[in-house]
Length: 433
Length: 104
Image (cartoon, rainbow over all chains, first blue to last red; front, top):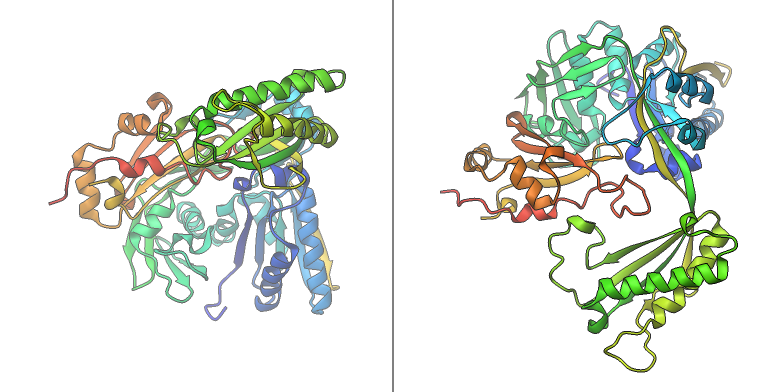
């Protein structure tokens, strides 16, 4: 804080954590870790310097915002602070989405599944990703702390500079660079990032022992988790860094310039949605018998067939074959890459097998796991006569309840109607601020 | 030599839940230029190594980052029961063995 920043921002979420957190309504981090970071922000950043936290609690849904807000309230109360807090919620109304879908204003992003009325109804939770606009509206109301639901990572860092007249291309570019913290440094380490923006360039400086940015480390960060290294779509337009320049400013800082921001004809809001897909139980164990390993695919298919026959016989009245599924992941063989594994011709000496059954209820998933145990253990192979035990169970009981799981149902953009309100802002005075 | 002998980092990662993106990154400009000039890194070659359709691949040559980059559809959506790499972080390994002519 010695550098007197105009604001401090932190991106607290990502879709990369998977569909579960958005579905279940709770993020991937322990409350203790969130409290630790929020307490530093609330006590070290002086009033008058706004704090922006976006994509609250990993997924940015309403329960995620509420969970974070509870921690903020607790810290403010315990430390005797006074803060004006803007809470911006980004979970979207189903009726509004339905209308948009009917009007053809919901458009899939690359490789997303087809969205129809049924899938929308089935979706547990849908969030929209806000750009700078809702953040700027909140900043104009003199708040100390903005707690935002799902939010563009870069927007957290671009919102205030754009309000102060920094060119949009530069503001968004700087945001893009610092949003992952020290990942943009030559070697990742503990610390934070500091950006100083001028009318035609910015200086990006890491703060932390041994941290260093180079033109290449900063340029290459624009590749990270982005499908396109040059064009970055935001709600109001596209950041174009095709002609960006990166120069070493001092031993650890990099000077950036040359980025452009091209406004879109109309705003679009990225949607992220998940649907509840069932419940899982998992058996995990190993196979060491070379006779099984050399015919592993055949053995595994026979085991699965036997499980399916047992399920049809014993659970057929409550479970049709389309209601449940088996997914297997053979570690040591091709679990990680699947059919893209090029080394599948080299048999391993040992295989770790995750045998996952998914069903409409946890009870049924557990029953299916119980029905799977005997075939896994004792399915015969021609090389051996007599009874074999071909699967080394890791756990006793053999299966682990994995609980509910979700799958992504929406990765689309919404084209809102003119002046349609998408995000809901509430201003709170905490500690009687 | 192999590609992993001359790179600073080869990585894969989700680019959204339905796409995977791969970065082949260098720290020395002369090595990057050598590999670029060798013609060993093309969309067709990368598609062959990864086992995907080159028509579905977006391929980028990033001079300012000293990097090659490509993005392809995921086999399964991230977090799907059939998916075994939630973050897509371990899909790059076959790229490491791409043969590159020796750098004199």
